Length: 271
Image (tube, rainbow, N blue to C red; front, side, top):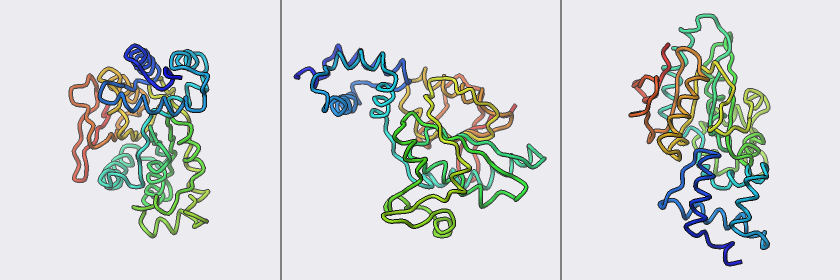
């Protein structure tokens, strides 16, 4: 039982290397305590399982591995988080994309690392408000956490979690239910939620906009570079990438161009 509750240096190295290989998430001495606490939680109801045997289990059991990776990820989000990005989306990015496409059609957006859905629902509300009737949009929302994806698909948010949504949006796109609010079926229909590990190729192409905010901060330099270049491959010509305000592509081997707008900074694929 003692081994179950203690991650020694040798086992820490084994877990750290395996997690990195599977997800690109990096654990160091600085955030080691997070891994230890999440591992203890996973083993709390498994008294017969040791730290060593659990590592063997997640190497062979894909469903257990998904649950474990889910448990070690951080899912902090809210509606209209970093509002300046949404001002830039409305005032600069969408008008530019309409100029580029010229002929009305669908604008394709990927919310990568969507957590419990606040980001893709925010994007959907905004585009529903600002796009001319001849235009439409499609949103793919993905995450490494199945638990978060299930919550996002359900579209229920407690009263404390709808802070930041303008009153007119709340009235139009949500229904008040016991204990909180439910996203409208029409808005949910605009979004496809899907499990995806950013370490892997998505197979998706021709996105006009990618949001991946406050995700690559958990990766080391090599993993960050690989993820960003996979985004490049998935995006259309003359498209736009939003990353977190504390994240940067500076120093990376990438073709993205830095773009500073009146409202926020972002990146663009301009070929």
